[in-house]
Amino acid sequence: MSEQTENTAEQLREELTSKQLATDGDRDALVARLRATQEQDKDTAPKASPAPVPALNPEERKSRALELLKKKLARANKFGGEQTAVEALERQIARIEKFGLDLDTGLARELGLGKGPQSTRAGGNRVPHGRGKARKRSSKRTSKH
Image (cartoon, rainbow, N blue to C red; front, side, top):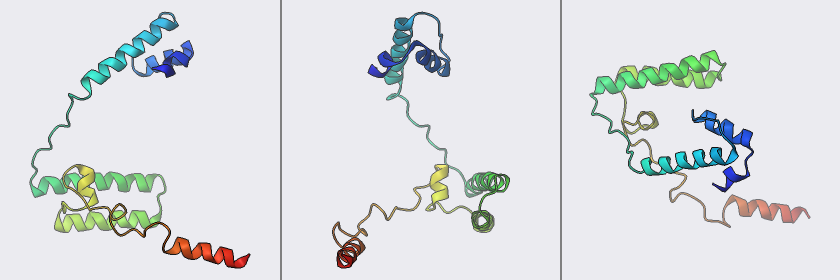
C-alpha cells in the first residue's frame, strides 16, 4: 500500500488500466480504488481453491501429454530450439505413444496428473557446508600464494 502512495498519478492510472478499472479522478481517488481492489483480492483469494482434476483414463492422460509435447515441439522448431531439445521431445512423444504417460514423471506433474519425480537437490545427498569440492578448491587457492 505504501508503494501506491509513492507512485505518480500516471503510474497509478497504468496499474488501474492493467486491471481494467476506471482511471478517472484525482490521485487520492486512484489510490483508494487500487486499495479497494486489493482488499477484494485478499477477501477472495483464500476462498478460491484449485479445481479438482477429474480422474482420467490412460488414453485421456496420453492424449493430454501428447498435445502438450507437440505444442512444445512446434515452439522449439518455430523459435530455433537446440537440436538436442527437439530430439528429446521427439523421443518423449514416441515413448508416450508406445507406452502411455507414467504418472511418476515430471510431465505428469506439469499436467497436474501425478506427483512427478522427487527432487534430489533438497534431499540428503548434499555435501555439508565446508566439506567436499569447495574445501579442496580453497586449499588449492591458498597453495598458489
